[in-house]
Image (tube, rainbow, N blue to C red; front, side, top):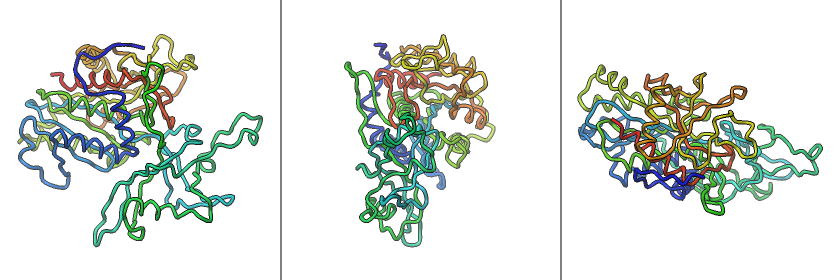
Length: 430
């Protein structure tokens, strides 16, 4: 483990990340948690469907916009360009189907569907809550509210070893084997009605929902020396938290400093609020226009801007070191990670690599370089999508972790402040 500490002051900590994650079981809750911190720091919420006030044009003005499960926040700088830290708010999990009530063998079930690349075995035998967004009729309009069921109300049981072939376990079928136990058939309430009442709305007014499960066990700093963080959704709330702290801890710069957190990365980013949408580009253009600039000024600003695509990175697994590229050992607690892929699963190029290396140096933290094995399929990020959609110079980076896409993940406690300090240094670059 590295004992390196950033020379740039940061309020980020492993305990703080754990608290952030526990408050944010869904992408919508991530946005709410981030918005609450922004408001406390003097940021003002703006709405895309409304005209923006003249104060947005002032240097050092602080604003944010939410679009569903995505949020973009910024502090306006004196210069025309943007420094952007990007990330994603969603994580793989089990989500509630449209007709969730089901019975089997005398047991009330809740019909679930895997979202993203959920590592299904990790979701078995865990106490699960429900969270997400409910849409309902409020008079002649549609309203919505968030719901966060903190109690354990769902469980997906593993098959007993005595019932598996050769006692080697079962690979769960996503259609048949990940539905959750909700209660006994003769006593269980209907799922949606129960959730609506939990959220304080009339079940008869419920019109739509985006509901998902989450592990109710709280995040914890663990290890004999308390230098590990065990938590759900480190991928990618680790970046959401580190980026937020970097934005709030840093001071004004010549550039407009931006934090852009997108939903739906785990399923390809192709939605109205994903990284493949117009969300980032339209917000950046409106910032330029609010300052009296033209379309040409916006295009020039984007050409001079840089985006750091933050997502978590694979630490070298101590039980499976052969699964990693030789010569590219990634340590837990070893500092931020630069991610490079020759087939552009990551967007980093030589110039971007240099920008992030300088940021790590400015922050006083070590930098690690990650390359995926050539004979294994490499995951991707919002980086290549953002670069393609906007033309921005984009660098893919992250913090190292184990058990990516598991219901419960693991990272080094020291990596949290080091990662945030590097992001803060990047936002401060001129």
